[in-house]
Length: 383
Image (cartoon, rainbow, N blue to C red; front, side, top):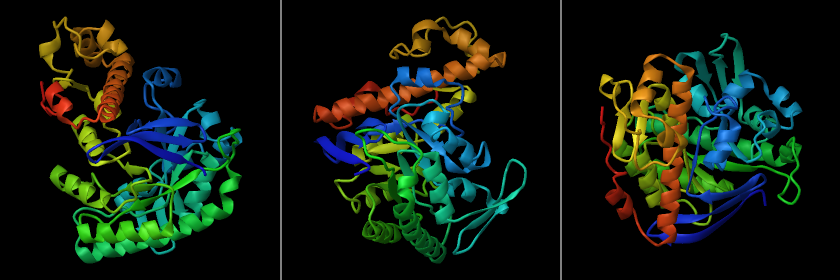
């Protein structure tokens, strides 16, 4: 099997386990930092290893445009190209194409879109998206899907869901015929990738149920919940996630795509999600927004100009051990590159440490109460 998933402990609906993929063993629930263009902005691979990152996410759309799939394949896939020995997941590019809005045109065959880089025209189909991801060589790849916009009426949502299901069948068919073309071989860990299916259905709970059941009928070793965090209220996101999870197989990994805040990833792990990714910790860092055990800190504020305290007394990352809030504020105000580096390092540390504590809590048989007591539920803005 391309992946093996074992649940080792539960606490209510939450699960802690291991996901074995060709390039390593991943402890779940896991947070996956986003390395859109084969890099987590501002952080080297050595530092990511030191932080304990188990799996990175790469973006097929961006890598397809630059430097190109064939270039990466010639290096033995993304692992060789970016010198990353641990696990990688790539998305299919569906969400990025969805985000292009006026630059795309969708039909049953696929999506025509214009590059955001130079305006050149391209055409993605389920088959070409699989071909690209096989060439990129990630351990886990995603079926090509359409992300339904928000808001959308039921007719539009159902049409989009049906298209995603047809594309899922085509994705799997192509993958099964070509999966052994992956550009790497890892001794003793299997020679193929794993293709996960994606559940869509917008904000309609009945359509989410139908999408889940029909995606399971197609058959995948793991299932993702997609099409969320596209503008809907947070409460609606949670409702859709909780409703959809009950229809997904308990013995397969469950991946919630594109969420969320530290408080949200704790909550979704409590509901039974095994894998999550989000650009928030890195994107927020570049804008001076830092996550701490006492709430969010906007380090650009003048109030930190003379602040000798560490960013977060309860954080053991190298930033909080060494630098003051005043220094971090100075770097950001001076537009120094080091500001992006240190801010990103801290935010990633905070997310990864949060997920470690979640796993530890589940193994002890505890629910989210210990996080409530530690202050991680406080989505406060400290300025």
